[in-house]
Length: 361
Ligand SMILES: NC(=O)c1ccc[n+]([C@@H]2O[C@H](COP(=O)([O-])OP(=O)(O)OC[C@H]3O[C@@H](n4cnc5c(N)ncnc54)[C@H](O)[C@@H]3O)[C@@H](O)[C@H]2O)c1
Image 1: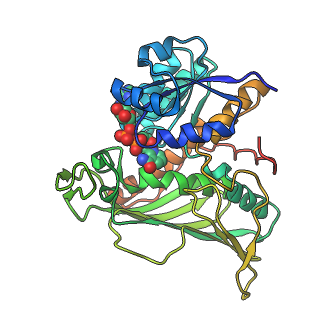
Image 2: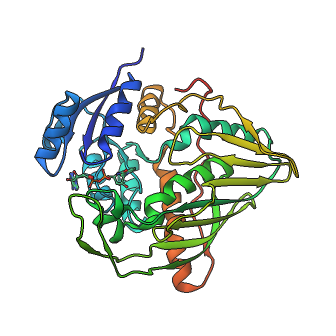
């Protein structure tokens, strides 16, 4: 049994219970402190899970904490990440890594200069269904990948999130919010992206919150809320993608891949499991059983657990800062392409993360 790795969580809002519940599946993780800019939020979450609430400063000064898990809102991800790295901690951030590559790059550089690790959500690509799809693609189950489709389209998060304003400000929007799940899974399956063509629109200048407790409040929209385009992978595969907060309803599946020998339905990359289906050219869809671990629940901390094992085993972690930086560069390219009318070349070329063992970590 490896020595557990001390974890401190900064940001105790909506997503934090998922991490805290999932942490119970990973004995390598020793959650030692919860902090939030709002101390009451941290205390409430600590009481709920029988953990200790501390200030951000106390958390960063705790020598037993090796990894800071950053669950704050996107526009402060880099600021909080830099504070963690400056304090000598590895950091794993919720997605996206930052709101621009320009602000995210110094975080990677600061961590590299101190031999510290940066990790980033999503870690759903490590889920059992996605790892089984990875094995299918690597084993040639669809032949040479040719193309695919990726769709996340909904009427907007102001219908359910208690504080949805950040989704419509710089750093929000459907691409930065949901693109990480789809693009990270596609890079896991197909390798890195070479270039992007994109178009983006902002059909409404304001949105009205319908969720509680802010129902009726009007919020400004600073960013495109309907983003569509094409990903051209280094491998040659071409994938059509749409991420939107402006679609009332639709019938597209989240992810499909097409190859020279077959087609694959990849389950929703926002989840760890789901039904995989494969078809041969002209044939019917056939279900494919998921072989890999972590398909039967919400394991949203798996990337942190992988980093913790990687620290003890002295190997690379999978949900890496380099992978997240590439995904951020790709997402940023949609607006740049839309504004310029040009294809945008993607400079970063992360290693494809190593596949997970069928039995998990
Ligand atoms: N809500 C979801 O379903 C969901 C799902 C997946 C990922 N995420 C991601 O998780 C992150 C957090 O989202 P959320 O929905 O939990 O947001 P939230 O607003 O509910 O919670 C964020 C928390 O961070 C705290 N915070 C903000 N700035 C801080 C700072 N500088 N220092 C310390 N604490 C600070 C806030 O006080 C708040 O409690 C985002 O990056 C989001 O993309 C959210």
